[in-house]
Image (cartoon, rainbow, N blue to C red; front, side, top):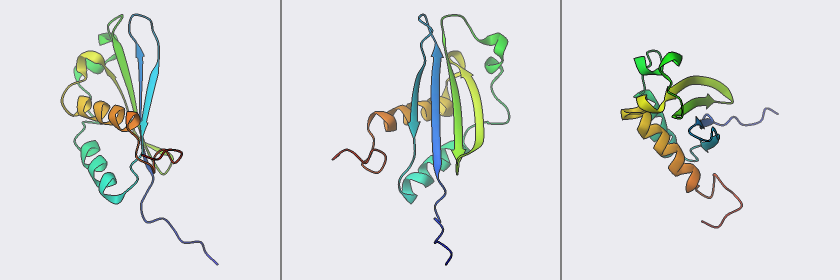
Length: 118
């Protein structure tokens, strides 16, 4: 017997912030748990200029003591998109994405964090 397949692909967005004065790393992760959430995340991800990052995203433009954000999008555990965005270029949809991932990680739904009674 063939096991049933999951019609909803597994989407995970990971943001790692590094740098700053102390050089510490912090990471956040979000994974939508419903089809509506997946559609919202996919729409947000579709607004980002993955193939043409802002000029400030070049390694030479990364400033000392500023944060750098590494963003990875996994679809079914495979890297779909990846970008490195310095703090100075974290504007518009990039900022919206980072804030959305941080919010989702700080306020997980029960499906994202099964051990809670949220």
